[in-house]
Every structure is written in C-alpha cells, then in structure tokens.
Length: 119
Length: 119
Image (cartoon, rainbow over all chains, first blue to last red; front, side, top):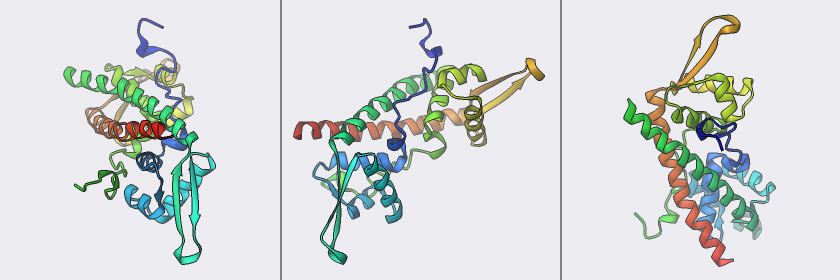
C-alpha cells in the first residue's frame, strides 16, 4: 500500500463492475427480481423498469445466457405468461457487483464533497 | 405511495444513471478526477484507470463534449503533456449520479440478503 492510495496503479479500474450486469436497464431488472423473490411476470418487470417489450426481451436474453436469470413460459398462445426469476448464481454475482458499486460511491462521494469545499 | 413500493410503476427505472457517466471506465475517470482536485496528467489517469491510450482518449472526448471535464494541452510536440480536470458542472452531475447509484445499492442490497435467508 502506497502512502497515497489515490495514486495507486489501477486504483479506479473497478474491474468488478461486470459488464453483463452494469447496463442501466439490467440493474433495474436484477433489483426488481431481488426484491420480488418469488419471481415476476414479464408485464410486471416491464412496468417496474419502464422498458419496452423489445428492450426487456433483449436484456432478459443476455441475462439468461449468463445464467443470472431463468425465464419460464407458462401456458400456450395468447393465454401464456412469461415468468422471470433470479438464479442463485445471479444473486451471488449481483452481490459481488453491488460490493464494487459501493466502493465507487465510497471512493467518489467524499472526494466530490472535498472539491465543493475547495471551490 | 402504494402499500407495496416494490411494485410501483417505474420503481426500478433509475433514470438518474446518466448514460454519459454510467460507462465503467468513465466512472473510474470521474472518480480519479474528483479525488485529485488539481487535475491529472493523461499518463496518470491512464494508469489509475488501467486504460489504453485509445480508450482513454475516446472517453475523455465524450466527457469533454458533455462539459464534464476540461482537457488542456500544455507545451508542443514531444514535450507536451495533457492535463485533465473535472468541471463544476461535472462535479455536480457526478454527485447527482452518485445519489442514484446509492439508491440502487440501497434497493438491491437488503433484497439480496433477504433472498439468501429464504434459500
């Protein structure tokens, strides 16, 4: 550890901000699912995250490919519903991501306040 | 306010996660600059954020276009250095962004812990 941690190599690289999670809409989707442990229907997720069908579908595909969520179709045709839930892998990787996010806030917030006092 | 805030419309849309700031590398750049109020040289920023010349240049251009940072070239030719600092606009918008980031953590962290207890 150097005397001036704010100048350490890669000090602010934030490698833990995993790309598949860091997208703004996906943060909303994962938080919605963490908050609703029994899972959510497609229409509920869409409303909670203020997303279009197309965008929600696209993000769910990416999250499912990364094994972070499971998407289940229940029923057939017009009566079918889609239900989505967080996997245990998803929960654990989201926790690790949140730890790194917390580090960003902890690094940046005191610094922005110091700057305010100087100006 | 509904009885169940976790089901409110657009509850997890996180509109405050401004796109120009939310990119992982830019979070590092802005945090580095907030932490080093007098500004940083290009080479220092590159090292702190573990970025290539090309990537750092690209991100600085986007941040400067949004008036969040100022990039100054000092000197000429091989002896020239590039110095970067946060603008007052940049500082204020970064604070607003950090407020929203804090909301994500506050929403998501207790939820991921509740899930752990249930499984």
